[in-house]
Length: 341
Ligand code: NAD
Ligand code: ZN
Image (cartoon, rainbow, N blue to C red; front, side, top):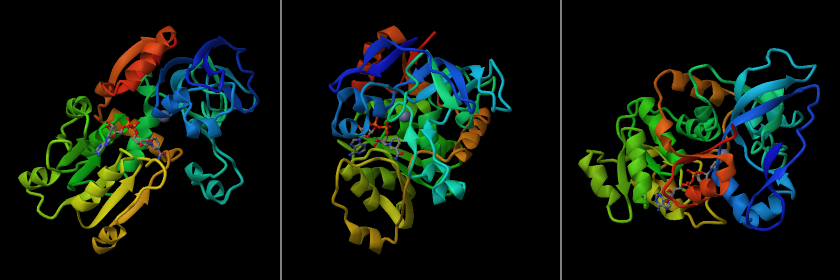
């Protein structure tokens, strides 16, 4: 089969021919139809410090996918050949306290497909049946291929009550844009999204009804006052990993405000703790998405009018993967989809 893999410990990914994976009794084999390129895949392509210490070589990369079940292990029940599906890319352990308490997404022994284990950038993927998420007919494959990052957005956005709240999202990358759309869908009053990249802010406003603010040339406090938010934002969703964006968020929150942080700051970043203490802010770190509560919630929201389809800005046949990665790196894209036929 065709597979896009890290074959050498240096920047790049290479198309190779690999054997179709053999499945075990608890697995299924998925014929991949569409995959999404993630920021993580860019780190792996670039072979940065994180990738060097995390990713074994050789490895088939990719973890955002949709496809169809073409083989089923003999222990597996409840799934059928031909079932369209996406799936959770975190392969969890069963022995940790968190797993045994049902908080599967917090299992410290988690391994990721396309990061630690063979991934989804291939014609076929082996996946434990436990990880499979069937796709309803009204969710197309390309949306199925972005459920992983939509799950990050949904899990982060639903950390706190949003109904009637004023929400600030910092960072209009694909996940921030989708989180803003979720906040809008979940009944927030004002949803303000910041970035320093005008292309991304334009895209955010196309995807949902939000107030885009370019903090490189616009004072966020002015926007806040124009909206009548005298005391600040009730809920903050940090989606940039940028230390200045976080400081700005802390400065813009209401007393007792709540912040969910998905963005990953590079290394140790200085934090103004006294501002957090005196404002009595609650800050929640967010990892991944809930397995499987977030999957149920996001599929339900998609079936109930949440529309994030415009966040997909580029589509390429997989043989043009280099153009796909270039689009991702350009900063002018939302989600980029590779088509596996
Ligand atoms: P992205 O890099 O595409 O988007 C980040 C955006 O932040 C960019 O558009 C950038 O221009 C913007 N930004 C930079 N400086 C800013 C500033 N001062 N103010 C406002 N915005 C600013 O990332 P993404 O793929 O959308 O992911 C969002 C974040 O979530 C990333 O940090 C990513 O590493 C992280 N992430 C975390 C998890 C997790 O489990 N915690 C999972 C997935 C992604
Ligand atoms: Zn991803």
